[in-house]
Amino acid sequence: MAKTVRDTIKEITRKHLTEHNGLAFGQCLTAVGWVGGTLPELYEEDGMVELSMADVAGGGIVVGSALAGRRPMYVIRYQGFNWYNCPSVVNYAAKSKEIWKTPCPLMVRGIGMEGAIGPVAGSSHHSLYYRMPGLSIVSPMTPDEYQQAYDYFMSNDDVLYVSEHRGSYLNSEEMPDILHQNPDIVLFPISITRFEAVKAKKMLAAKGVNASIIHLRWIKPFNLRDKWRQEVLNSKKGAIVLDDDYVDGVAKSIAHDIMMGTHKPVWTMGLENRTAGFYKDVDNLPPSAEQITQRVLQIMGIYN
Image (cartoon, rainbow, N blue to C red; front, side, top):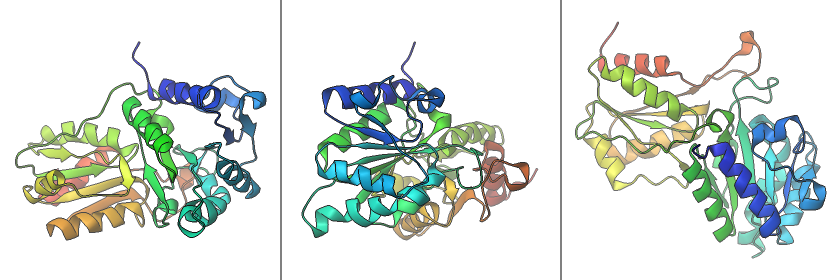
């Protein structure tokens, strides 16, 4: 059976704790399914440390262990809990190397999940870290991408925010970019929207629309590669940035960079500007394949 994202994270964590003297902190690490099956069955004596997720002190403990050289993994079960846990990360760990010349390497695993368990727990919140200096952001959706993210963490002294999504955990396939010589439009999906973009591409093809897909794995730093720039320049209509975070953040920032680099129109799709929670009256989900398809058809001037 092919290795899944879940298998990859579990294997990485086991080796990190047992072979690299690492630590893992978080809420309910050793219970309730071992965080979606992504953690090995290890305990406190092995370096698996339970912390409350609704307590700002947890971040301070993790930062302290990073300063002590333990390269901790900070597992935040729902990305919405970042609001409680990020102050120590962005205000100390991310600044430590620049201001105090003391590296503070730690890896934050922020896990997205639509709905989740309440209005503070759902969706992704990588935009919360995006505007802060001293850290990098990656959103791996495949086994190889996750391994590359971990290898980066182990070879650099910076804070790494890993924007995960439970919807990717069973995925065992890699997701290469899909380019056309002269596409109608270029999709730049982030996180779980990458899977919806692939579906939308097939739906658009049935309508006679060619959409290229450029998967955004590394969110920060974002570099508009020459190949990507040319793809947008060659397109008829420009590009759309897709995200499972609120659009007033990463999506619009990257859209601005693409627009400035190509002088082509760039649209955004993501969560609406309202609460995202686990209740039908506050459902606020990332763009689906159907919604992406409909938006592209509108941009192309094609109406059903």
